[in-house]
Image 1 (cartoon, helix red, strand yellow):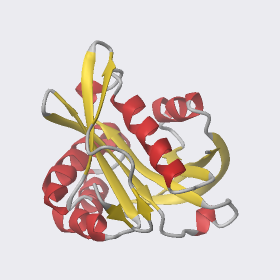
Image 2 (image 1 turned 30 degrees about the horizontal axis):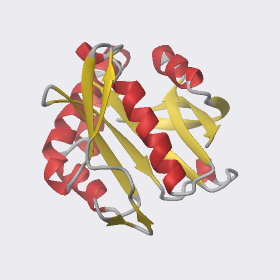
Image 3 (image 1 turned 135 degrees about the vertical axis):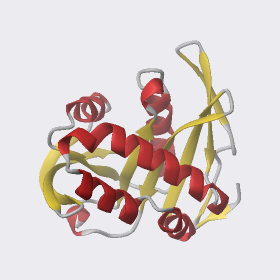
Image 4 (image 1 turned 180 degrees about the vertical axis):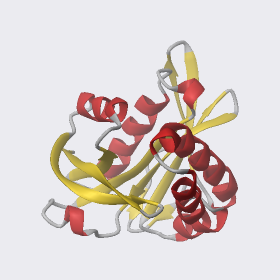
Length: 192
């Protein structure tokens, strides 16, 4: 793909893997993917959290974090890496790694944040998350990161279980606002 930040990528632009009798393709995102990332981000966040939040808080959160302009800004930041998952040429999920320093990772050794990993509902359990997280681990290793960390909602049990299965352990909490509602996230980390 070329150079991103100080690391020369050795991953191919597309990574193919059979999983559950299907072929999942992974590629790096570009700025031209902003609208598609925005759409799938809004869809998956809404499907996962709408029942736990007011309509007003959901609308405010989605407008603030998943607007195409916001995605474009994030894609242009050299400290972010987005990878996209495709199944039969359909965009079915994405992950975002973030190297920007944050208070939550100040005590960690050379960390990178797994800020988002999303799969559309109809593809959950089909290997999308597995392929995305494996690719995130590879990227983190290539960037010589020592730890990968994330925040996950305290009531998002399915995601907590997924991360625990990949070796993440809880190391704290932080507040994650959805609209005007402060909610508790677990902080989880894993050595790379």
